[in-house]
Length: 165
Ligand SMILES: [Zn+2]
Image (cartoon, rainbow, N blue to C red):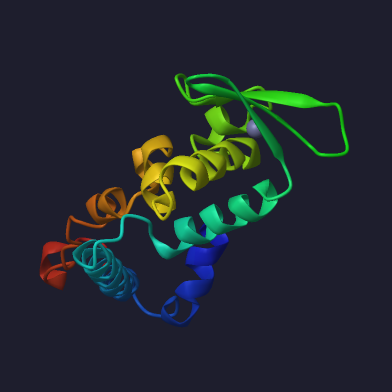
């Protein structure tokens, strides 16, 4: 992180501290504005998943494609590889999988994705994205990302107000 900040502001480091601070504030204002706008547009278009989360969902569904799902109870499934006897149990009541990944990242692992895929395919065709949203942590949503970039970055202000020139 520090190296990234240093690299981004290398060209300004020969100036005064005020200029470094000013350029940092200006860049952060621009980044926050662009990200806020991107997530506002996404929400306005009716999508809940930012592009990186949509990509994660697609990747997880690809990993889930060859898994065998056997419903165990109303809220849980047993999942296994077609060529292995190893099994895991996915519990949607607790949003957990015995592999540990689902509860660790609060995002469906391949096993949970396989269960969702089966459930959606059998019960609610075409509603995959909606079902995924019910089991991811809100931190993955566009609404939460918008909240993260909602507050503006204020300008540095007049140089006279600072004592570090
Ligand atoms: Zn799992």
